[in-house]
Length: 327
Image 1: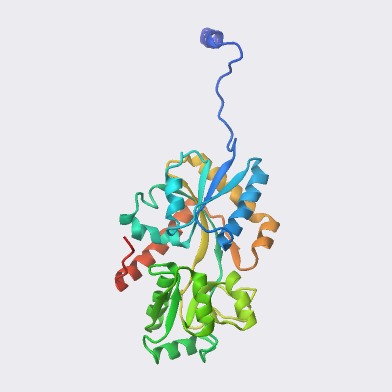
Image 2: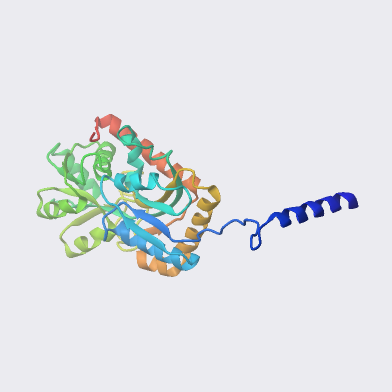
């Protein structure tokens, strides 16, 4: 044994003598050792932007490196995703995505990458409560009255969306399927563009996040018939969910998640996710985001399963309604 020990010592001595003066054996570099870019594929000022800034600020403070937002809006997030998919898989480029991410696998034939396979899912960060709001001109006050009103006027009620094939469009199709009704879908360039028409009664109903809709509802410019989430919201505690009003499992899902380029090392993915868990537990984060936001910070596998479930649900609606995405 002494002989083996002597040989090992001699080998280490020989290796050390081969190092140039001032050289040391390489050590793993701690992550992050430089600023991290977080691509935001949404317009500045949107709810997703505000939420993303809060996470970036807290991560910067916790980890001692800047998490910098890089805005690349447009193309249903595809402009930002195009940039992210080309980035080095080293943890220094991350990408925020919204609920529309679950639609992208249905558009994969038109994309130069696979939105699921060419990205690593890091975490589902949050879900936002949502409402179905109607024009005050409609003589209905709840879901049952809305369903009866639409059934009596097949095809005459206009459901406003943020574009053909958008989450809002598919949500309207889901609502019609779940309630055995028929509506006409009016597509706008963006969700906000439809609000004046809904208020004026030219369009009749649309999905809307709590954060956006609450001001309109409280001012009487729009009327909320139900919470399109699985739970009631403390901001409107007396407003029941669609499930409570006889439309089980109906949900207008709005959420924010985080991706990284494919082949980003698992230890880095896990490090980021663990830090996000710390971030959402900070009381300032919940206070800034408000009661309409449910903070989550899931594991990568949980996020992947969530997206897969949503994609399959949308796939069924797309196939049943013959929706074709733009080439």
